[in-house]
Length: 221
Image 1 (cartoon, one colour):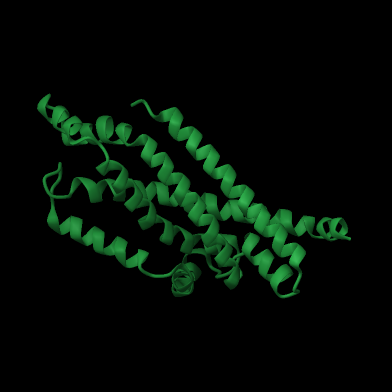
Image 2 (cartoon, one colour):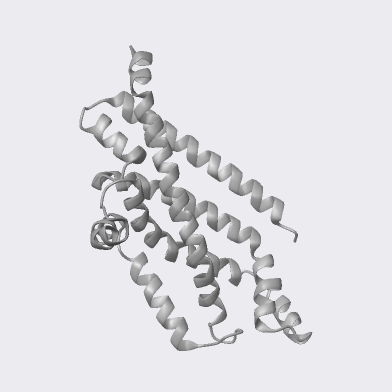
């Protein structure tokens, strides 16, 4: 009976799985493109660093903290007008990717900033002493030195997005969360709920193992 139940939901579960991967991939890509430079800006504009600028530092910091302070489920609903404007719809995985991206950008930016702060200041001072320009220091010193931390930041962000994507199912975002709510919660089907939980655990473990492996591979210290 259990096997028959699992077999019957397999097509829908397969669709939900790939919708989740689609949402996470888009939002993670956007967070990398926007969040990485933002994290660098948060670091290099701080007091005593390459592009010290209190106004930029405070403005960027306030914006990041403002978005991070809003619970994702509230942010998801609040951004529905923006989602409608960008995608032309408020349902489906593409629409959900808008809110996921907005939530992921400041989260990833702070993790990048933290990774950069872990770099030994002596390395930066040595680069300045040999006449390296600020842009050279960012490209040739900061980012390579922070690479393991940035890889771990990508891993943490991806795992967080997986959890956020499950919440997106509440407003019809699709994916595993939507599947669990429609087929498991509304139908009181414990088999489906258990299956989705196990699937999410497996995905998270795989993400963490891959992330840890890549971080070790790029760590040249």
